Image 1 (cartoon, rainbow, N blue to C red):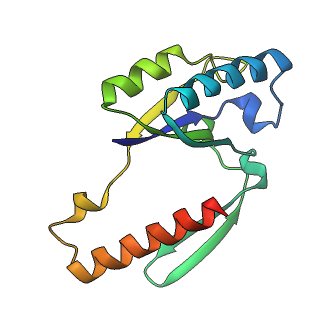
Image 2 (image 1 turned 120 degrees about the vertical axis):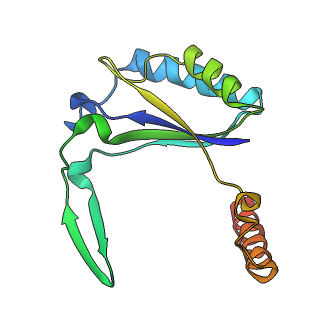
Length: 143
């Protein structure tokens, strides 16, 4: 199963305070372990929401709001995409992760929907279109 591992923002990350060399070294080692174990598919840190935009949907209307956004604990500072055997395996990997922030922090783990999860409502034509898009994305990433 694939999961998104979400590193929650902190007041420091939202203030744009960059991590020190030791934290970058520790996170680099952890990422190396993830890659060697075949777990990590992708991952990146995110700029603070002061550089972000939020698009609100209401019917056909779209409203764009500039960051920063309130409720720091609900914001995302970074993420990984992992391929794991189970949620329990993902939890064990997260427990091994160095604290990704300079203060107390939280990491959420959420399963990623697979096409099969929508099998009851997807038509064969929509499934085929999704498979073609996935193949195109994979081909572009190999270039």
